[in-house]
Amino acid sequence: MTAPPTVPAEPGPFPLPEGRVALLLIDMQRDFLLPGGFGESLGNDVSQLQRVVPPLQELLAAARAAGLLVVHTREGHLADLSDCPPAKLRRGAPSKRIGDPGPYGRILVRGEFGHDIVDELSPLPGEAVIDKPGKGAFYATGLGALLEEAGITHLLVTGVTTEVCVHTTVREANDRGFDCLVVADCVGSYFPEFQRVGLQMVSAQGGIFGWVADSAAVLSALDPARSPAPAPSAV
Ligand code: C5J
Image 1 (cartoon, rainbow, N blue to C red):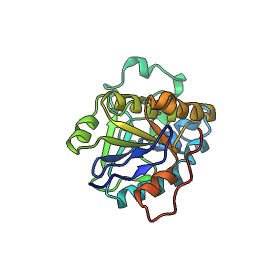
Image 2: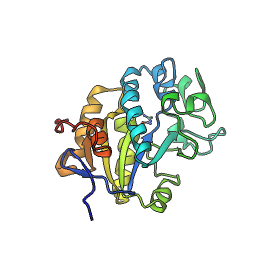
Image 3: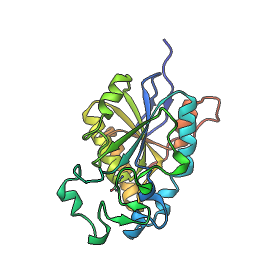
Image 4: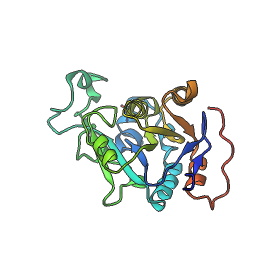
């Protein structure tokens, strides 16, 4: 049996066993990314999230070409907000809460324009789209069952935001026994400091939550015909 390809990563090589790897794209939604949208209305610099889009487009194309399972998630709620705990609903400025009218429809409500995924990363027909009411992608969703049925053991984790939904999902995945590689340039935070520290927290202590590598390293491992990836940089 040949050894699986590995990604040079922090704190060590991350294997990509055939048929067992999925690409997870977390919450690449218009409400978080678009200028003039909900994220920006909260005072955030959305360019910090938008820069994730080009490398993630490339990684998504490579994952599809390599036949990986691709799973998209969207954070949001039913129109009657019955799946939104009052504690979550109360957060934020009174005029900019979940369910309120926003520039792209009701904020974080399923079916609204702003709730959907940005055009550049649109799911293909047949790709899984997980609607999640929480920050973690496993909480109150079918993600765990979907991955188990597909025989997935290793996750390439991407999306926004690094310290919120990406972190929560990686922690949930760890507790369920998945190995997670967080792709550094394919996750984003509105706060550069949280991005830096959030990535460090994943791979510290010998990989307490997982591994971290840039997309170039993952692309080379998915397609060895590409030029070799540079050695991992300290994050
Ligand atoms: C947030 C997310 N930040 N997808 N959601 O509220 O990280």
